[in-house]
Image (cartoon, rainbow, N blue to C red; front, side, top):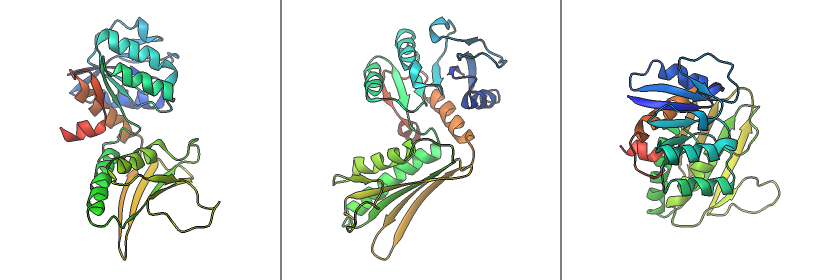
Length: 254
């Protein structure tokens, strides 16, 4: 049994995770953290993490970057591994996360879906294979989301592009828009394109376009439940982990 503290327990994802964990024999939410305590839960809810005196094996954060310092301090002092699902950290906060990982176990991912993280690994394999056989495939990333999403491109699209770049033998250049100039596509480009419309939860596709053949790797999220399930699996995975920086690829490798 993995005992979990849920940061952001009254948000949409926090409530969804609570519902799923209630049916999960391997996990239990023992405490919640939320500034606004408007929901009834079967566990105690604290407005501040510093006030939480409940023992736990892992902490899931689906809240706001504003409380990152509190989370990292709690994790280091209590030796509780953290699963950071919140996005939007600035460079200073990212540096703090890296520093904290020298003292506690931290898993951070721009997307908690197991399917998306498997997709990243498949794209890395494809990149290596094509690189070993002429590197003649152009790479394009297309992401689609609902019309209320503020950022573009998505953090997941950038995570996919970063994964491809990490195994590429040549330095990749990210190109987000081509209308401003007229020239042939550079071999080392990764085109990244954003579509916003309707209620699309999230779709990501990577196109490897070669000579007379195209390979596409695609993932569709039909509900946010896939992100909730991924975060729970990550919390169970992080129980008793040693200090260090982890991501979803470590979970997939087990």
